[in-house]
Image (cartoon, rainbow, N blue to C red; front, side, top):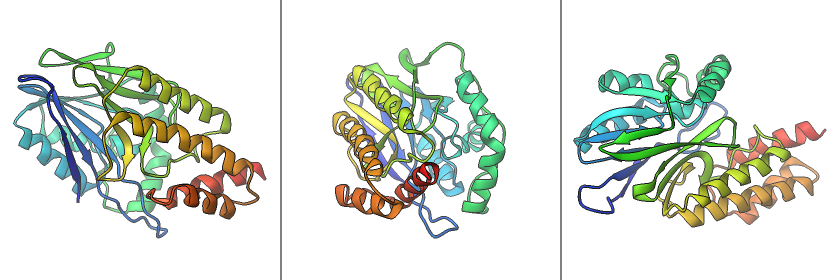
Amino acid sequence: MAYVQNIEASSPGGVGAVAFTGSWPTISDGGTFSPTTSALITGPREAVLVDAQYLKRDVAELGDVIEGSGKRLTTIVITHGHADHYLGFAELLKRFPGARAVATPAVIEDLLASMPRQEQTWRNWFGDRHVAFAGAPDPLEGSTIDVDGFAVEIVDLKQADISPTTAAHVPELGLVVAGDAVYNEIHAMLALTTPEQWEGWIASVDAIEKLNPTFVVGGHKRPEATLDAQPQLDATRRYIRDYADTVATSESSDEAVARMVTLYPDYGNTWTLRISANAYFANRA
């Protein structure tokens, strides 16, 4: 089941938001996939969705949340080219035909280039539980989307668990929907990046911090984890640095995983940590 958290409007008639955390599915090799988030940003009459889920059940529940808001969905924004964040947009557009789906041109290029590989991976991991792959969103024109006169700013980030990547900033609400630049009480996916890129990832977290958010919706989170910004930003930077130090001073993937679990005993999804450590030591060999 999905988990929903409300961020109330800062003033009557202002903009609010709903953080939606999807389910925690098992995958074919016996592991689990980290819960993926979406965020619905709402004004008095309109709504914008950031990221669209990927499992049929979660996409349907997300659609119910949108419908239940009573707002008119105008736009779906995709932060980056990982299928767990974009796959549901086509199904949601069928349900809300007056909306459009957008991403930056760089994100679209990466999404299309990686789609054949991701489609095979998703089929292997989830079988028929995910919605169908159905093309790409349209290119975003400019960098701001309007919600009843309030700005949703789309911010390019240097690096997250992949690059290119973006975040959505709602100044009126003090909210950043960070995509996979921020993980919240979940082991981060570091298998797709190099030690040099980890510094770029930390720089992205620094860039989010400079926006002075009150709330952050990280791309993957433990469902009940806080939306308060600063603890998430501090923890994401600390985790990346601890992981870098740990793998550099460990003799094996097993040792690195055990040490990280000791450092972060309450973090979810050790499967992600195992994938990351295995990739690091495979490349170091």
